[in-house]
Length: 195
Length: 183
Image (cartoon, rainbow over all chains, first blue to last red; front, side, top):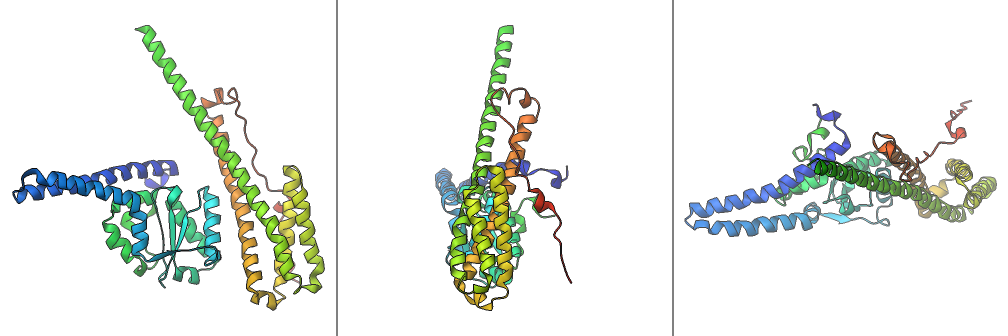
């Protein structure tokens, strides 16, 4: 079945499922790795409890701090209505159109044209936009970009991306973000959006 | 044995009716919430208009008529009762505001005033929010109505007290083509 025939509900279900698999699977892999390393270097099964602690902390960090880590690495600062009226209004408009709660809004001081959404669920999502994007695009164009990001929030792509990164590739990948111009991390996205 | 099979079937049916009922209640509340979103934005517009008029009236002494039209439309909308009257009145407000913003172009001083620009952006945004809130309302109504009409939910829905909601309709006068006079 070709991907574009699937509806949104199916996409959301698939993202939820994949997120759970990745969220649990990747730390388990890490745990196994610790065990194997312990065995290799004659520590017996000592690697197993160590790996367990590592895995659990990775999960906790991803769940509670994942979005903050990403936002921190990109140097994003929280925007207010006073500082960025148009951006704030546009985000508000798009979240009304999508029937979602208002996400936190961030601005990244960079000339690059980029934007991303992050968070575990629509209730605690965040949308970040570069200063370059705000200055370069007119109101309608900005609305288009934000609509796209709200799509990631509604479809739970943000959760999928967080689970996939599990606090690791976040650091390498999202940290590099402002250098890419409007090219988003394609490997982080479900196939339907690539086309 | 037969009794247990019968019991199993009854339990499955009861569980299914329960989940359908809960789903419909959730949707009904979503429809209500979506409707109140529209009201929130309309209220916001009512609050913004006097501020804007207050700020621009010194600049626009020759446009008293346009300003009065905006205020009058706004006051009519505030006191309007019932969905049809509200809808008609709000459309008057939209039209009057558009006219006012068009006149803005003749006053460069206005464009230099930060306060005016902020208020204009706020009103433009509120205008958009009203439109998007209406669109979202219609989306939820569609989901709610469809869920009631689908078999086999349609056998139970009306019996359990669910009614189909009405869509927000664009008033007739707004459907007319815009006449552009280029002479």
